[in-house]
Length: 306
Ligand SMILES: [Zn+2]
Image 1 (cartoon, rainbow, N blue to C red):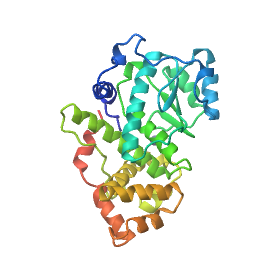
Image 2: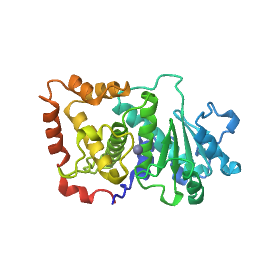
Image 3: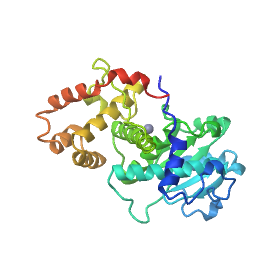
Image 4: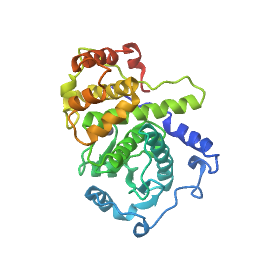
């Protein structure tokens, strides 16, 4: 049973405020003056072509408000909720773009984020979209739909995970394999939390879940899934995160080259053997090393989350 780690959001607000010279007050304590400015729907710089977006806005159309920041457009019902989301989203944008070592091309489209802060509305919407069970959000064709409970708005790394998907989709518009998309989103959102904690004086490393050899999904099967396997969702996420972590740790430039190759839909094994040539004697040796790596730190995995 996983409970996503706490702390991230409030911490990020503080970290962002500090990093940006604290020119803006924390949205926590604002009453609107420093909140995300509301923009009329017709005056947004871009419209969302995603049909799921239109469906979301059609649910209780009178209650939606809109706003935008440098990389995102927000649809929301309460400004203070949207304000905290917007600050976190831009923070995560910077973290992920840095991790991918890429800058957004000028004039690129903004991603739309739909924020549901009422359970009833979210449940109603869920029946229209495909929910990603482990994160409480849906990313679909470059747009993001999230449930954001204002009472718990400072919990979880959901937003970091989902923003990673959005950015991955921008940079690799033809899609990347499921393991890589989910594994990278987990890897980078855990890293963002840890870097915040370090900034606050904690000795923190990203916590990654280990997987025992008996539970591992064979790599051939892992890289072939189009969706997380329903009966092994948790293992799929943990193992995908571990695989990304292992590939990055082995050689970051090679990982980025592999990402580019898989983003062009090259088969995993062929691309891997070409790009990581010289690092592992064969695919079998690589899998053996990965199994050892995946099983590390078994004792700490139970304490993750909170
Ligand atoms: Zn995901």
